[in-house]
Length: 291
Image 1 (cartoon, rainbow, N blue to C red):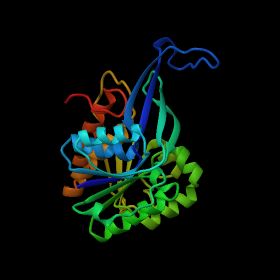
Image 2: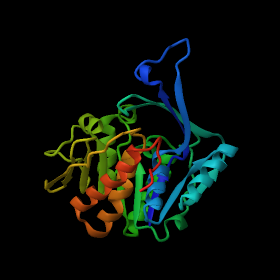
Image 3: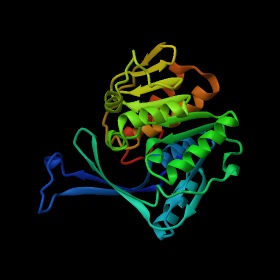
């Protein structure tokens, strides 16, 4: 079973009108298309896993409100085992989508970082634990996530960390973050090309402490580097009619981790990750198109 720890929030995805995709009329109106979807990096990975055949569980905190209830219900409908605490106010993120599919985030995480309850029973049957860096940046969630990571590792689970965001990394501090990852020593560390540049990691310099570093590079080949320095590169398929890149990295993780965990075949796992991510690129928000 794949278990994720972190955020379940609402994504408000905004596409600016085609003539104005890269222009926001400050102080006036901007013609847009707006879609509301369930979001949150940890929740996305669990959902994509469940929808593509991997038993999945989500651990987190939502608000004690209608939005929190709706988001949990949506996740359950996708087949995810939802283990949440409901208290406070559920968060939302506004995603501004440019013509090329790239995104800018306006973030209000609500109570997503306030999870302080550790329940060892949530790890029963779990073979993979995936934690976005969003979940490691602020207490009490960060402390709780580390408790889950340590307990899962002691039980033999594969541990995966995703870098999540250059803004989060800068706020946390790059040197401090490197020390955190070295202390966790994840089996898999994932990041995109911008996060890799900020962390000064590449094919010749994998993330210190990680057994496998996976660098997602958009339309360029994914590069995976073992701690011993062996490099694997796999190009993604060409995707026509890209709608939105929101959730593509989470979908990649949901495809990559189960296959890598069971086989340790890096190339096959990357290919599987690419295939799930491609389905997200063709749909609005963190959703899958029809296979």
